[in-house]
Length: 119
Image 1 (cartoon, one colour):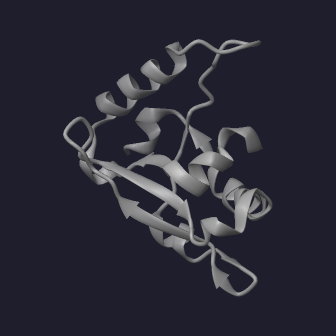
Image 2 (tube, rainbow, N blue to C red):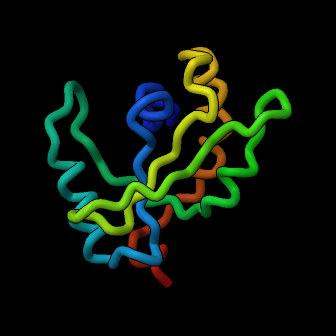
Image 3 (cartoon, helix red, strand yellow):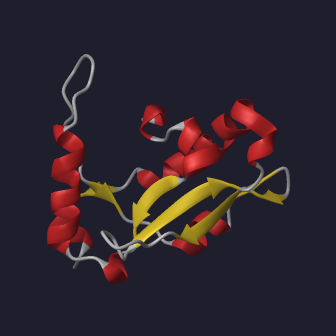
């Protein structure tokens, strides 16, 4: 679903991901529970599983023959496996970010249970 990837995240904050090499299945499960417990207008959050992708695939995406994304290690004390996906040219604005989002979405379609992602 396109709204799962915030344009603001792509342009400013970074689309947050976990690097599976540095986190445990329990950490990801707890992280998802926290996210699902946040208040939301309309329908409550539900888990649709997780998507497993690699940074190389994201870094290979192109728009107008230019690199579309950068993936940065943004580990911190609470999450040593944190990384962020950013638009390569955020100054191009929201229309650009919408195009980028459409490139990234196919990589997130193969959803699975958290335990399966760690096999």
